[in-house]
Length: 204
Image (cartoon, rainbow, N blue to C red; front, side, top):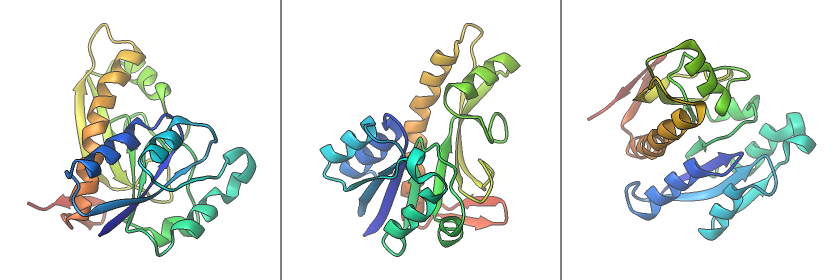
């Protein structure tokens, strides 16, 4: 059984896409062992509880720099992969090294554009529209000790239309996020993701 944990900071639609993929058998022989959140009272927790997934909350306002260590204490030796699905806290320290190439994140742009510190949520789409890019999308990448800087696994592209607002672009990209994240979890669970330096090879 391939075991994963999901980290979420908000409504949890990306989390839901993974839950659905597991429940529907798209990701086979996989169990979600935990959902960990850095804010109390968010809907991601409700989604987990509806699916009988154990939940943990490490409020970033209280735990601050200790959030990563708390996550490591819960997950070390317990899961094969950590999935950051709309997770906003910066991860660091031993958690990064212990889960090297075993922790992924989804970002709502085509990295290396519109990413890094301060680039999250609607700000990403505001920046893309302001810059005038013709395409945007989402990126699933491995987590390293930088911000949105780990090796890229999968990217999905959407057009940026002339009349787009940040909200309409966000909505279109979110649809692709809900495809990309389960796809990558499935590929990793099947052993089809191989890393060489910064390059990631997806095996047939």
